[in-house]
Image 1 (cartoon, chains in turn orange, cyan):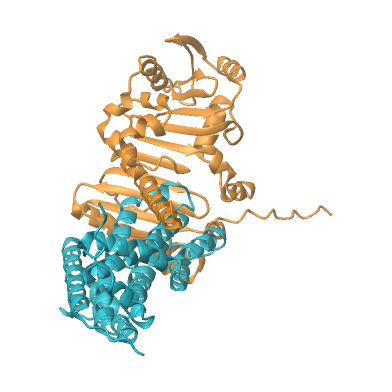
Image 2 (image 1 turned 180 degrees about the vertical axis):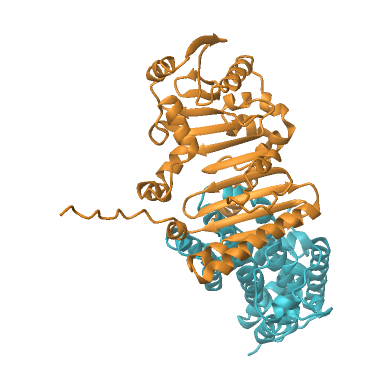
Length: 329
Length: 269
């Protein structure tokens, strides 16, 4: 082959390969649940209100997370604290990824993937107040009293690197579905569709139905978003984000109609305008206000947030300086 | 049975022979080196972005935004028309200035084959330079936070590659026509690109008389601009733009072939 032939072949090969890789995202949705999420997550209850995930290793390794936790400016995520209390796991050290599903009634179940000592965890579970061990299918399941006596908690060990934890009834249901190879989550058409489009390779992500926002506190006279503020009525919400190299969060909300979406977009723009107004007193808010991009397409609103870790660090509350106590004379 | 060397080759066979000869000469020329550097500059920018700029640029500017700016402002508006100007006008004028056109005319090939073969060589050369550079730039700029950044905009990449190819065809045909019509086509060509094509920024129907207005409508990137361009920016339907550009390219090329076939070239002594 002549040198021109070689060159033309390399060029064509590069372009075809590039197009192939770039378009691979289009083929992904059909295989989303089976290829991108662990098989056990398909046993999440069909009536889940939301499903989310954390790439704990990536989250804990990010400079932003380490800096904030080290400076105690940012508390560890509630999910981490809860996981440590319930199971004795140290998420930053032992866990690779966590997948959470929200259940009706405000409870949740989680799939935890990582490298942990199952024997120690079993022993810890057996020692909890009101602990009861049983077999569901051929897997060990422990239920025990939670903080709220009406909501017993459970933990089950699927294999050496996978455990289920959370609401006892939810964990039991998952174990039963998993034992029968049932993809119960797939029967939830709304969440299934959202999962197909979700960026589940992000550091953190979440997809949920309309109840996700409506369950958030809007606050009254005691604070929150104000008594006159009403949460937008959404059919679904998808959120994904990364912490490096920039802190990026993308939220997509599906409203009932275009008017609802416009209302939501206007509300979001209003809030960013309020931030901009306060920029006079606090200059770092100016960059924060410009970090939002709000777009509306028909009944869908997309809010992109993109800011440098330094800007967020500047906004975080400074750690309290210990006041010197006067020495007794 | 011996081949009749005096018999004129069919148009396509002749064009294929001229293409093989011209592609070799065109690609490995000083002109291609210069254009290669110009066309591959975004790749250098992509590397710079990944190594240095990604943490320093304004936080609202994503890698895909930058890629869109590279395609819309750098390639579509400037470098693709320039590449077409430098190659397209030289298809015939180089042969005339080097006095080698006589050798082509004395071969048993039609004149139309000569121009079509050379035009195909120009397209192959520029496509081999522009398309891979665009693909590499795309991946460098969009994958800073993982491969998902690239897969999220795959259709945009395909659309951009198509628009760039269409730009090379349309501008190439126009400048091939200029090359066979004018003795010194470079200055009028530059005036066309940097004076007439600015009409695309005006209001009303005038932008439809430019090539760039139709070409800009093929891509979805419309970077923020200042001044009149921002106020009057028009976008035509992509399907209509594709049809118009195809018709323009066909008409320019047909006219160029006709003029080239009938024109008498008098070489300077």
